[in-house]
Amino acid sequence: MAGLSAGCALAEAGFEVTLLERRPYIGGRASSYQHPGTGEVVDNCQHVLLGCCTNLLNLYDRFGAADKIRWFDSLTFVEPGGRQSVIRPSGLPAPFHTAPSFLAASSLELVDKFAISRAMLALMAGLPEDTTEDFLSWLKRHGQTERAIDRFWKVVLVSALNEELDRTSVRYAAQVFRESFMKSAAAGRMGVPTVPLTDLYSAGTEYITERGGSVRLRASVDYIEIQADRVKVVSGTETFLSDYVVLAVPYHTLGKILPAGEISQPLAQQLNKFESSPITGIHLWFDRQITELEHAVLLDRTIQWMFHKSKLLSKHRENGNNLKAEQGSYVELVVSSSKTLVDTPRQEIIELSLKELAEFFPAVKQAKLVKSAVIKEIFATYSALPQSDLYRPNSVTAWPRIFLAGDWTATGWPATMEGAVRSGYRAAEALTQSLQLPDKFIVPDLAASGFMRLFK
Image (cartoon, rainbow, N blue to C red; front, side, top):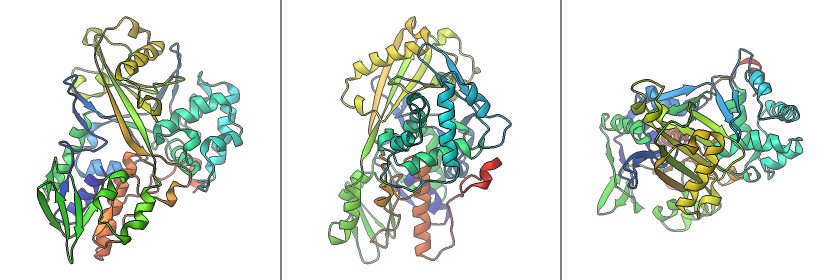
């Protein structure tokens, strides 16, 4: 997505863009493909966006994919045993717009709610400094109960940042809550793609080709060489000569591509400080419908989110939202920061998922599992550790013709689709600015509403 957004922006600015993609499909870590074991088209992991993702929404508008996002105003939290709490906005001004449903939530006790409210007030004043303190320590210092931590802070942040609270930057944890939960009701709306991810982003390739560019799939970049007035890009048996290159690759592969030598040492030292965190997606197909819910947050268990793909994907909704039981259910379960599952065998993960899912939705016990798939994205995101901004590199490099993009670069956002698109736009702006061109691509943050307008 970082490379795609950079390519779309530069194509719009009049550059002749060649986009090289290692995989046989577009999207990178936000992609879909036909799973060989099931024959089904699956996303490598469920991706969602929020109303505060202004640059991501701008990219969708740019290549005409905004109508492929379905929006939800509420979140359903389900406890083992099936009890549900729904958090939704009210007519109150921000940041109090979810207060009535929050106070009514059965998943938290009154003492937990008071503790959470106190911590939220502390976050209203502005983003904290990024120190060596982790967010779990910050929460305990601000008097949070264990239940508040497990059923509120952890639920939101492990999903948003893909890392455990004791390894999370206080600044980025605070940013998640301020940008999505506190700024406005519009900021916290959740958007879910209604088509497979590669279908969603294929419109971006058309945007580039319609403007004179080209997109090459199955084209890994082996290495690049700096020439006097060009950059030589070697991809298998092909060579591309370019005026400028935006490298939108994972941090752990960048060093293999860049020219060797003393000039690359400072960047190499930065890259060595990064750490990754995995995500596991569990896809289950049942012979009957197991729940009416379209998505849900699952509490107190290994599995964290349920997305009812049968109800979310357009191809399953052509005849309306209400599927008949005999049509079955296709659900995807998500486990963020899934370090404990990396070495767990596939069948054990399936059995664990079925056991836990039945605790939330009893119909699973009577349903027959038709097929299943487990997808582990080992390098899903970089870890937003305390003070990680100290080694996140900027778009500009020591080589005047080479620019960097990727959610791990210095975007001011954590590793999200929004962060990836911001990085692509930042790289495109850095390139045009090096030529003293006026093009601007970064979209401002969503404006605050209500009382949040009083705080920066």
